[in-house]
Image (cartoon, rainbow, N blue to C red):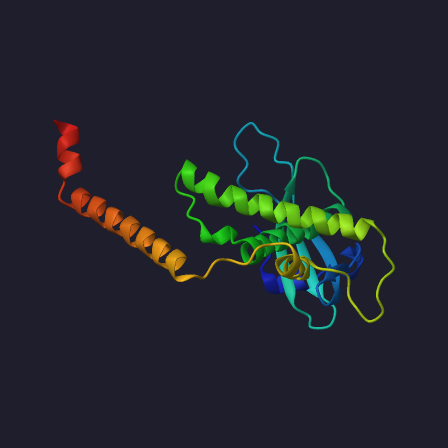
Length: 207
């Protein structure tokens, strides 16, 4: 049974920890207090080692906001290790959010192999190239400019769009071409949907 959020907030002083309570944010460091409470795993299959379960608690030092993480490991894990894993998850979420906003990862519909290969994979490659280019720029150890933050992925993309990447076409012929393509695709999808609803495909498959 996991303790209720109200109970988990009242962690005894001896159990509190400050395992690197700082996290790098877009606007500066985040400051947190961390604590952990051992819990009993209640969904271990018969004949398996229950391992070690803990409730990881994060409290913002200034606002007092609490966050909770249910953690499980086969071997005992220290508070510092659990905090490191939680912070790694934040970086993964930030990378996915950046890929959605910068390279359109969420614009595709991953319903088949073609959708994955034609859009999602290209979006991920573009996001990877952007991350590698930024890492190489930062590894060059150029002298920092006074009064400026380090170069970010959105800013790097804006610079590439202004200097290297070709601007998208907006002429009338190009616009009319893609308008016809979209309408033809929508007509084909609507026709297939109507055929499915009238059981033409189902009836042909059962003959």
